[in-house]
Length: 257
Length: 364
Image 1 (cartoon, rainbow over the protein chains, first blue to last red):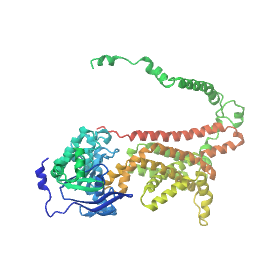
Image 2 (image 1 turned 90 degrees about the vertical axis):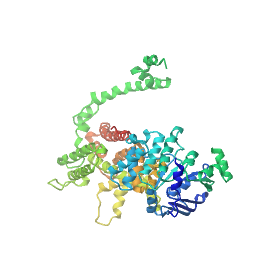
Image 3 (image 1 turned 135 degrees about the vertical axis):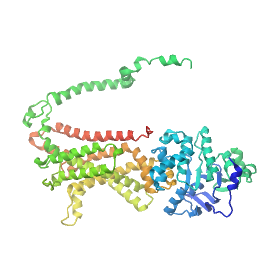
Image 4 (image 1 turned 120 degrees about the horizontal axis):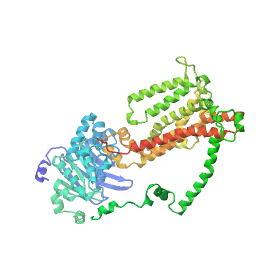
């Protein structure tokens, strides 16, 4: 909400980036999905990635916690370079929260079990403590009263808020959002975006793939536009929306706004 | 909106509710169904009284085989006069209380353990004790119980033994094989695929035969492995391959997002499988799994091929006695009903488990 404040937090000189993607390429079979991607994310930065469907934007963030494997270049998350080393991957994943388009809650567990699972098994936290933590984050996403229910019994917007809380329980340094509102009914989008905005205000480092341009304008420090597997344009939101440089960006914005 | 109260007061037409409504909608809803209903009724009217006459009215229950041949109805004497051999086979006559007690312990333990929410360490120890006691009762050799060779184990205790351990061991082995088949590690994957395809390509009879006849040829001289144990291992290996394929179906039905969500939390492979994937995948495949396990239960009767006397084979032996030849219907009805009781219990239990696993909110 408060743009100036975010700008102040931003770009503290001399700090190390939390995510560095350097000359990264990826192929699905013969298909070159990501071409020479370079992204640096500083602590507390909020980045919105947009672009037409099939442009590779989801694939980029899925590479960051290695749900997808990149074939060339480097990805360094929080000082750890992603390679085939399983221990490194698990370490990175525990530090990086991910929110999916289709929520992917665990349907066989209650809401509170969904939330406490990571802390208990990955962080080795005692059960009671983990449940208290879970309740704490359910308060933050404003649905503590649903704790004993199963995911199938609550609405889509609530499920997505639970999914955000589930990631937060791991106390991640970075949050990745993969089209978090695309599968929601229109009346539920706002409740999810509100949670994301307050998260941003608290200084969480975020990369958000979304079509919600309003969200990008209010929250983002930078907007990255991708098309055909390439980063076409990257700018701060005001410049990006008011004065797009590239004609593909102009075309995209004219279609979406 | 204004007519709501009036509408609520109208009762459904009598023809649609109650017994009459049920009969109409289930038995006579259309020409084809009506004809089918009438045909089935006619057939039932012809055969049911005949069966009742044979089985209950003209039947004899506690006579010798000689008198049976003169009776018009069923000769249940073939069951009652031979019940102990039928159930316990060649187990020494005066010690047959031992397998009886062992079976009662097994059934009681199974009933006691039916609610898996009560499964805990204590119950595990209780099972260990129960298994030890059952083994001791069957085998003897301690505490003044005379030793009984496994070659003498027969009848229902043998059937239950082979089925119980067959099911108990093949299920986890099958799950492991299913996971192995999905593994990214080539050696494990190849082993699982070869195992599953090889075993599924061979009939159980062949495997029992190999375990009984061929396997001993490969053992060094003087080393023998118990025949019952060999049959048991063959049944476990065989059933596991089928369980594996059923479980694989469950794993493939899982949404990829579940794997990704588990991974993105930083869970390792075993945590992911144990906490997220298997609980859901195994639940999906409860019906076909129980099908496989019920088959396994019935397939234990194939041990007849290697001259083990399970309950079906003891029945056959009785029918070979001249006094009782010709009463196979009665004898087999008895054995069938024993099989039915166990298989039906398994199937009912699986339905109970399924309904318990519905994701319901806790009432608090």
